[in-house]
Length: 214
Length: 55
Image (tube, rainbow over all chains, first blue to last red; front, side, top):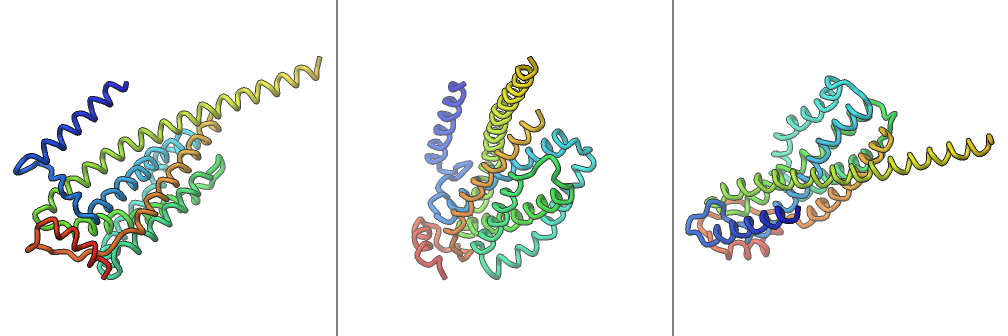
């Protein structure tokens, strides 16, 4: 298992070194010299982890645990998507007027709060509550992604803009994939731990019952 | 079994809350940058920006 990770890391290092030495690189890594671009790139990587993992966890919760039909669980996510669509031109205007920081901070605050509520959902959380939470979470996300990215790209000189976009997209996909793999592993481990705990508890109670009878 | 899975999902959402908090902290360091620096393409632009970014 570690072999593949090491091969991957070596290949990545070779790629970066090669790109830095080329006269006309495929992917310009020097764009990280611009501090705001580096920061915006870091933020979008972190957000991608949170966003993609929720995208995978929601269907598991809604369909497997709650047994809500695929149709209804799709409808659950629809308002969130609509809100994202409606918000994007509005966010653009707000960005021009107030700048990225205030938007990103308020959007991320919404995301943090709604994510926290998601960590409290139970077997009997109402469907409408789920819709509301998911919609608000998407609303928060929509205020973060675009402004942060635009602010970072603004710092790059025009020649480097394509490199910036390419770099951001690549890193977002990669971090989303790694992040969701990581969080699903966390989920599976926690599920196993809790299942064992519950089973042991159940067994214990059965034993007590048996002892009392005899 | 479902109960155990629910616990797993709740826990994972808690972790993703923490990840979002990291993003929130990073977001406080965002500064506004003015677009269009066509004439200066050197590394100095980056350095200059840190100073002038807070307009």
